[in-house]
Length: 476
Image (cartoon, rainbow, N blue to C red; front, side):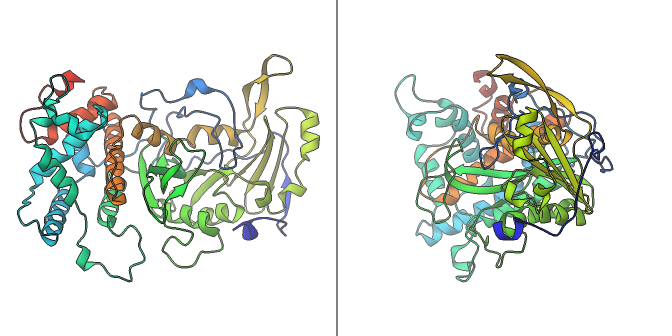
């Protein structure tokens, strides 16, 4: 990947005068109304920061303003309606069927799980995500002050553990031994969620591609270690999300080839971006990614498909543009805020900007202008400085945080019960993701203000087919 994207190139890069750079295209099918205030200072894979400070714009629990007039295809006004549109009844029926089948295969002929009982099981797990005990059996404890009637009266503990033990998503005997898909045990659920996520909401104009970690420390060949993540050990998932945080598409990481054969000239990371963006081709969407993904050939490939790309770019992937840009030594002499811009015949613009360190922004839709002013603290002068900031950096900081926003929402009330079966952990993680996506749809539809905790509690109450959780929202 480094070889195909780095080093010198025969491309002709031309310097751009200050104020002469292109502005971001606005011909997308969705009409921009407001800008999302995602936290600036997004850290790239190498640890470089595209913009430091401005921490007062961070997400604090309220849904950011939605970009554009996108259509929602969800009927209903209650939280459970939005959740069930994403996590459909057909999915529940399929899981119940495979769970009963797996129980029979293991010699448990009388499991007899029903759809209504499985909904109660899901509701119990949702309650456990925001009413947390160190051990799951404590919810059914006979000790005064420890027993949680909301859960204990809904289902016996032995029945709960029985369902958890036999929960399955495919028929093991129907699997092809030659199947290279490492997520085959949960593939039907992942494919169904991917379809409902995309059909529920038309894509936003500004989207981002980044990685998400599903915490897991058990034995697993595809387990990854990313030291800068809050939960460094786990299963990596590539995600495409909108600026609002809504997850549109995802792909679990299965190794360099991804279980898909050979890697193209774009490299593994470039192939990931192309696959995640297949459903937004020729609609003039703007996609943002960090320097792990960004290469000049990737931006060109996206532009051929009607998608504009912007990202931080590593210095060894500039395809000869570094020869026409100002030298780093010269920029440091000019001071913080110094900028240099070049463009080529394929309308790819490279912006070199000096903040606390030198940043390279590569884009097929934006460059230097219109510039704005960013405030930075000077350790030497002991005061705030106003420095020039290119438009590409501002736009990147506004719209790159969609996946991180989804991560932050999931981490508020996560299902973190340990399980040796990795696909059970993946299932409950995407159950949390589905809840957050449903909450975002609920807020976008203009319903009454309801925070994520009360929204999740409302879904949990609706999942119980008995009337024992009528006071759930009051308790929270």
